[in-house]
Length: 255
Ligand SMILES: *C/C=C(C)/C=C/C=C(C)/C=C/C1=C(C)CCCC1(C)C
Image (cartoon, helix red, strand yellow):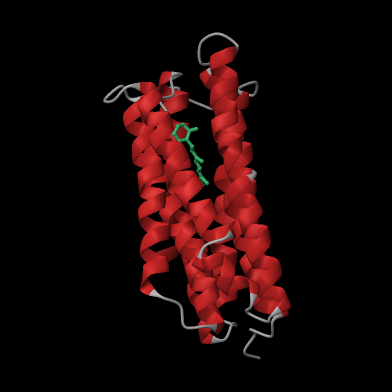
């Protein structure tokens, strides 16, 4: 009987799994706040990914791309957090290198969203796309090389700052900023300025957390990770929600 076979398989699988799980008792402790914050941000990014991918199907085609990219960002973050949480639970140790890998992929994608949003209503130049992409890559690669000790820390800081100033200039006063100013759609203008604030204020949480933990003597990796996880809620999930709101309120729904 089919039902019996399924029950038997379930039994064997459950038994087999619990036997292997017993071999290595690495579970999330109830007072492990770093682990719990990774758990919460994993679930948040999972929910956001599902939401963006489902919602995009009811948008007119021009609005789908920015929301797809937002879903890719939260999806990539989700997989990283699952992995980082496991590393944390098993070793009690965290290296920022895992975050840098995630930043290397997600930060440029997020900056490209600025270009994509403007492209919904206007023809925008390829130059803007490349400036946003390269500026963000300079920022994260410079920061990494400095922090990993491949170049002097100060030089890394200067490169990272230069990249940040460059992309902020582009979205405030450069071609992207100027295009947004005359785009003539309230929801798009509102979304564009909120996203700009996220990249200015929300993104500054990482360097501030980083500098603060240095000033308070040695890097406290634990609180740094809780702060970064909190920041990611705003910078990744709220970021995508801003785009979704703009799409829906500018009549981007196809039904
Ligand atoms: C979704 C993830 C986001 C938006 C990550 C943003 C990360 C930063 C703004 C990181 C900044 C830093 C560098 C690029 C190098 C030096 C160290 C940091 C953390 C200040």
